[in-house]
Image 1: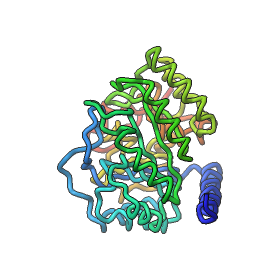
Image 2: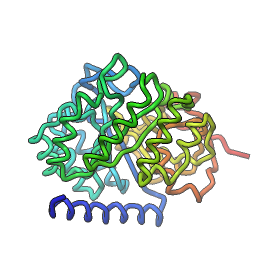
Image 3: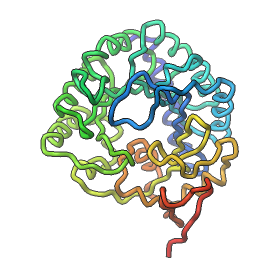
Length: 339
C-alpha cells in the first residue's frame, strides 16, 4: 500500500471513530442514511426490487439540497445507492457535497461501469467506502453480478482506489451454487479488500432461513472474515438458523432511507413509512422514530439497519409501536402506546 493510501486509511478511520463517539454521546441525529440519486439500473437481478429501467437521474440541484438536509440533521454516514448510482452523470459532485457536510461518503454499486479514470474521479471527489455485491461466479438467469464479469473491475480497484472497498457475497434467494460465495470472498481478500456475506431476504426484507448447504458455506465465509464488523452482532446468526431477533430497530431515527422522490422511509423494503419529505424532517422526528418499535423487526434481515441500531441496543426502551403496511396511508405516522 502506498503512503498516500495509508494516510487516507488512517484519516478515514479517525473520522469513523469520531462518528461512533458522537453517536454514543447523543441519540438525536441519524448515524447513516442511504440516498437514491438514480432508480434506473443497467442490470435486472431477479431478486431485486430496488430498481427500474426507465427513471431519469434526480437533478443535481435537488440532490444537493437533500444532502444539505441530511447535513442539517447531523447525519454521520451518507451512502449512495440505487438503482445504479454510477449512471448519474453528476455523481462526483454529489459525493463532494457529502464530504462538505462532514459526513463519511459511501456508495453501493454493481461495479459494471468502473474504469481506471472513473475510479480516479471517485478518489478526487472524496469517496470513502464502496461496496459491491457479487452473487455468483458465472452469470445466470438470477444475477449478472458475477465474479467472471467483475474480476477485471476488482483488479482496477485494487490498483487505483484510494477508498475502502468491501465485497459482499450472498447466499439464499435463489442463488444456484452456495459455494460461489466462498470463492468470491477468497478472491476479495486476496486482492486486499474486506469481505462480508449476506442472506438475500424476501420482498419485504423478512427472514428466510438457510438450507444445509448454504449454512455450511455461510460458516466457512464467516471464519474467513472474522474481522468484519458484522461479527460483533449476532442477528444474521439467528437468521441463518431460522430464528427471530429481539432488537430495537432505530429506523427513521438512526437510519434513514431517502428514495428518489426525496421521501424518508424506514428502509428499502418498507417504503411509504413514514413517507414524508426529507426537507421537512426534523430532529423531533428523528427522536420520535428512535423510540418507536417496528413490528417487522423480529424477522428483518436488512443488515445495515441492524448494524446501525446496534450502537443503541443497550438504551432507550421503545415507548410506542407501528406496523409498517397497516398504517401511514396518508404519509403520517400513527403511534400506538405500549401498555
